Amino acid sequence: MTRRRGLLAAVGLWPLAAHAGPVLKVGPRRAVKSLAAAARQARDGMLIEVDAGEYLADVAAWPQHELTLRAMGGRVTVIAAGAQVQGKGLFVMTGRRQRIEGFDFIGATVPDRNGAGLRLEAGSLTLADCTFRDNENGVLTANDDGIELDIVDCDFGPILPREGRTHHLYVGAIKRLAVSGSYFHHGLHGHLLKSRAALNHVLYNRLSDEIGGRASYELEFPNGGVAVVMGNLIMQSSTTENPHVISFGVEGASWPKQALYLVNNTLVDQLPSGGIWLRVSPPQADVVLANNLLVGTPQLAAEGHWTRRANFTADWDEFVRAARDDFRLKPDSALRGKAQEAGEGGGLKLTPTREYRHPRGTAALSGPAHNPGAFQA
Image 1 (cartoon, helix red, strand yellow):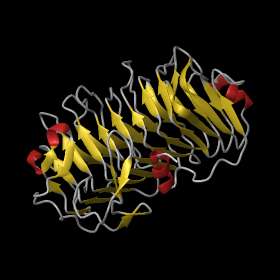
Image 2 (cartoon, helix red, strand yellow):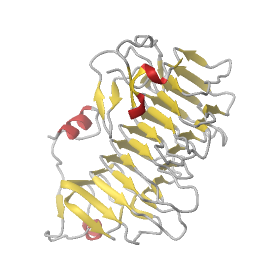
Image 3 (cartoon, one colour):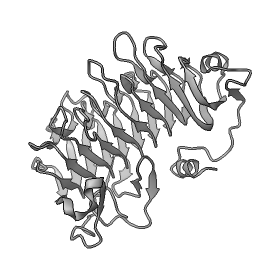
């Protein structure tokens, strides 16, 4: 088992045992040479093993249940080259308990300029170790309260320069979203991560617009719901198109439970005029702000009924090498050891057990999390 597969198995997102169902092998030297042909032949419960390489204009819809698509011997790169399926993107997924491992999705465009590297229209899906680059949107989902989406160790890279509101990840009104160990960067007009899901776990990621990035929000939950945002490095670029970094509920509270848990994050604002860390609209929302490090000029405004503890403004020189995006606290920082107990929320204990490792992935902490911010090492 590779190191990456071992890590994913440890967090419950990669199977420890061999796949028990039928296997279909795909590649230029195989009987089944294309992804489109594999999609036509695939059956429920099947493992599709795809030889590494570039698959040009090879797009497909996958309605099968219990289906796994796995890159073998390296990465599988799906390049649009003008192709799309159902007017939506490169892959359209509609089955229950589907999984994609080790794929790159590049160059998705469609006539209405809302194309995606991948569209999740129904069912449930896990994306592991996948990359989305130069698409109009990275991943889009339908509005379906039965959909569940897990994203582990993925890279959402530059957005294709086009007109319109393009997002790296735009999740509709679904049941659940979980994102961990992933890198969202170089946005354009739209948001790095936008979710209308009822339940959101955004843990141990890097959402940083980077030099030249022109994203709007770094993180938005327009209809609220329950959102646990823990252990993330979230950075607003100097060229952002919106001063707000995180937004919650500004388009109306669609879900009966409204709660935001912002815990152990490192928030960095690089906007010369100063940004706004957090915008929360529904007055009834429960908000917990705990153990966050705030780097930059804005203040973390809060309503009187919000729970606030151990949030600190940090100077750039508190960190090992902030100029190179190393936001570990220095060994002699006075902020070390100042984290406080944050309780529970959103079905989780609000204490980090892992931390993000660049360029994507996570590592288990060697002991309890005593420091504020996203990094304990």
